[in-house]
Image (cartoon, rainbow, N blue to C red; front, top):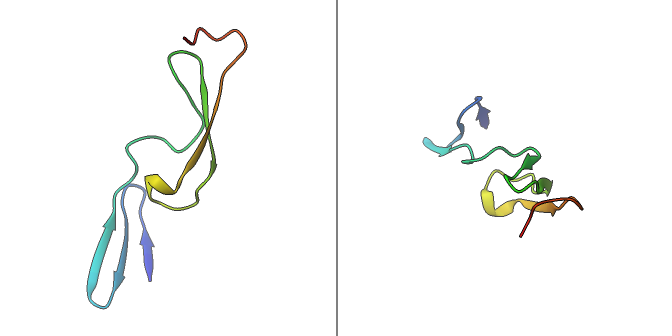
Length: 64
């Protein structure tokens, strides 16, 4: 059985509770200060290492 809340996910199995804290960042499209877009393209898992991100630079980006 897995129960969800808006902040913390947890599971309860065999009289044991395991907490899954939310990631330290948003898992939606983000834009960096230099204008790069970071888009989550895979990783339905809850763990940070399970996610794959696509970094897109704009042609007129001020990236160095």
